[in-house]
Image (cartoon, rainbow, N blue to C red):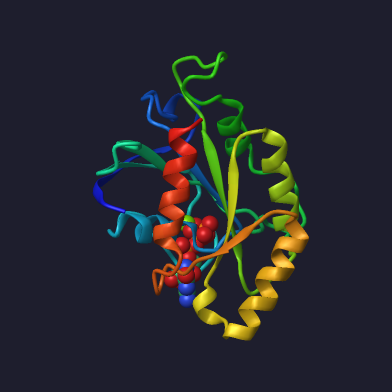
Length: 207
Ligand SMILES: Nc1nc2c(ncn2[C@@H]2O[C@H](COP(=O)(O)OP(=O)(O)OP(=O)(O)O)[C@@H](O)[C@H]2O)c(=O)[nH]1
Ligand SMILES: [Mg+2]
């Protein structure tokens, strides 16, 4: 995937800050520390998003505008959302996202009959940690996203930390738990990222 440029647009703290531009938005959803911001950097091949070994780094809706050399997807937004599972009190099975994320999903994407002048996500990339198959918070998040009714795909991050045998078992367990395909990726080795870009382009260019 040829990323021509990537630019941090802004951090959205309320609905007025969500994009007004018509480019399709891919929202990154996942537990805190699963690797959302790191994946944005890996997909862009630049260090634009702030990452951290401590969970809870991303608190707002961070918008990254990507320009690509693909004819089917000239521009899109990669949207870094706050992670879940890091609430005070540690309610790991919480099934609803933070208020800001729910407001974000209440906005239809550009081209939708109800769309106004502020747009929400066209599709979602759900990230789960390959090492922890079937976590309740992730299962709940995927069913929440599925209920939104927009396209979504699931990737299992950090597969570089698993042996071949462990990874086969983990991926099998993940797709059983979520009842959908789960693609292995690693932002460290780059594994699965070209295929992921292809899926992203196909999804965002055919709403
Ligand atoms: N080994 C390995 N480590 C990874 C990978 N992706 C992310 N990490 C590490 O996981 C930690 C968390 O990554 P972040 O990208 O900050 O996680 P996040 O999902 O954005 O977390 P929040 O902002 O708290 O929601 C960092 O130490 C990353 O270096 C991966 O594919 N492999
Ligand atoms: Mg982050």
